[in-house]
Length: 179
Image 1 (cartoon, rainbow, N blue to C red):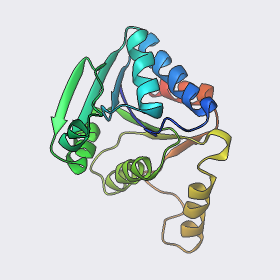
Image 2: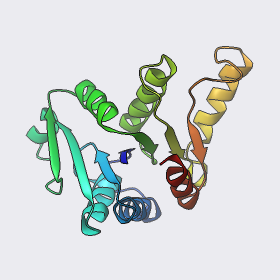
Image 3: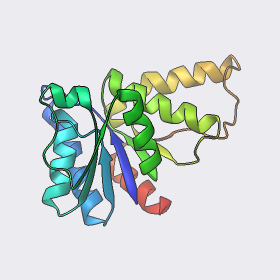
């Protein structure tokens, strides 16, 4: 299974969050899955991809030319797709992946997460998205969705919706069940 992981590229985040990347990357490789990610260096992106490679896994990077020009292209990918823009990166990752995982991150992570949710909502794909709500990181987004449901901007039963998990072990269980 090709698992796209969206996450932070910042190195200054707390170490416990960086360890999530280590554990997930290692698990992906040990289970014989392929990591699909943004192909850049830093933070959870580096930790997840490095752990996957060190465990012998396949790593597909999808990196925009702007990231390369900034000197932030990763050198650990077994396959690398160079694209012209962030929009093309999102589309390429959606096309390649069988499912999506959101670890904690910032605006870029949120953009990728909402892009997958919105495109799934309109039927462009039917691939599951799992959001790791580690230590309540995504509680605000969950509440936002509940508020939208209550005001009927979202249906009570969405045809396509993210699956929230609270722990990495719960995430791995969900991914195993998704095979």
